[in-house]
Length: 107
Image (tube, rainbow, N blue to C red; front, side, top):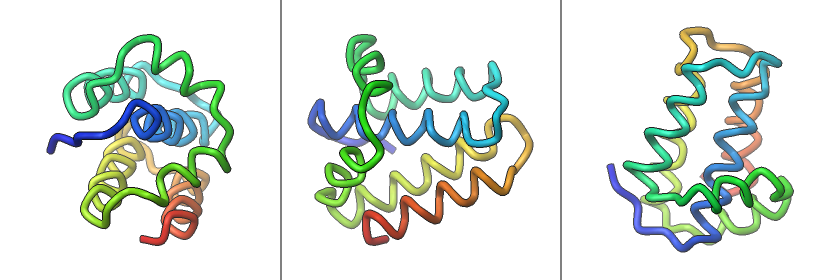
């Protein structure tokens, strides 16, 4: 699973990954590891893009992600599900973030 995204799109995806990691109020090492692995291997993000993604607003990230192709959106959802499972616990707030993103980007 490799995505060929623009820098802005990569930052928006990483923003959503951080939102999921923080959704349960417990940001774990396994979630940080997942962001690092997916960020580097799947998205090819730079450390600067990660820093910039943290500053990105939710609505801004949704507007960017709405423009992805259907296949890219499906890959994003798969990434989100991996993030939800990263710490071995599925929290209702994480599932709510997933549902919100799906609705916002049209998947």
